[in-house]
Image 1 (cartoon, rainbow, N blue to C red):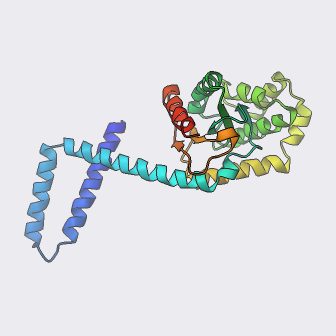
Image 2: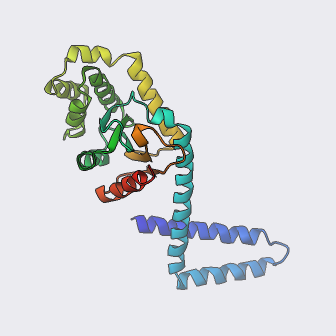
Image 3: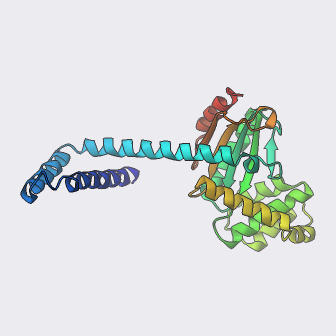
Length: 260
């Protein structure tokens, strides 16, 4: 499906480029000549479809490059908020590399990435992971995010996080509260803390960061050099818009760490 989509994009891009070129040369070619040239271009593309693949690959590479450059600028410009100590953190608080995850508890890909992150932390004593709750899948996602952040006030963010991210059924307020009770939380206090201005401000800040990073969905990752836990301006940083393998993330972590 991705290949078909890419080919369609390439075909459209090629057609737009060809159309633009023809539109820019009205004085040089008569309508008949333009029609003949368009026919020649079409016939050539039909006989050499591999060109569409090449165009698609070049287009995707250009888009990735632009996206990475924009993300790098956004990371540097919002480092204080991104690497805030207020956000839930696991691993080495002073790790020389930090991985930030924007996620939603009802995101299937986020659920699949949870054990990957746990393994990365287990394997690397110099890695810090910062969780950015980014509830984009409706009311239940918002309830889950607020509950998890409220659990942090009782020192049990990770306990509830694990319950929610590993939940098999679709979340609801009742299921979130059951998970909280199972995680050993004081549910009465949790419900009160969920309405606190601090938690609302945290989620709002996460949403604003996501907009600045132009996130299109979850999960999304930022990996950056953070010597002694501090963001290194001008250091290596990477943006990963979507799920990735443990090996791919580990490679970026290694690159970021090598720049510490």
